[in-house]
Image (cartoon, rainbow, N blue to C red):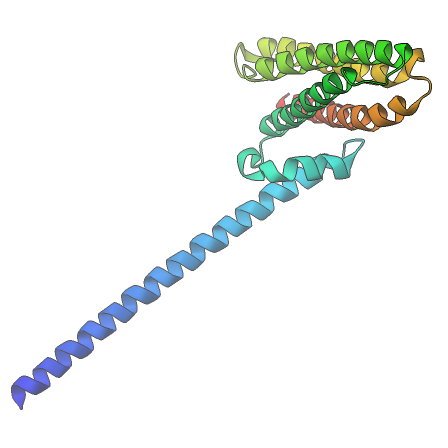
Length: 208
């Protein structure tokens, strides 16, 4: 009887220890999940608040919220992500327009307009890519180096925005079905670039 009683006590003790371990693990997992959820909410709220100061806040938020984990609450990473999104959109649209240019049925005027627009987009892509590279070196050279860097980036992104606007504002785009097709795509790129410039300006102000 004594041996049986001892075995029962030991078994009960083992069960109790296991239960405590499981409860502790569950509690830790719950806290970890809660912290992760809070962090994600903080990141997305940071993006939403930052985007509210741009000209196209809904587009800004929808295009950047998917990168919240990477951006976290960094103004620099937010501005860089906005440039990345604008660059990807410009490249994709440029490739689609290049294919459209090769299609049959375009009038000489439309062909010339497409060629001009592709040149403008190409310039815009180069300027945005250059800005992204420059942003990567944002913390080098101290305050003076930062000031020169951010001034260059602001100038280049502004020029890219001008190129994008010129693509749809040119006289050769004054009429025709192609204008309708191209305008929507280019305007989206221009809006993304405008948002990126606003976030760069905010980053510059925040950094000072």
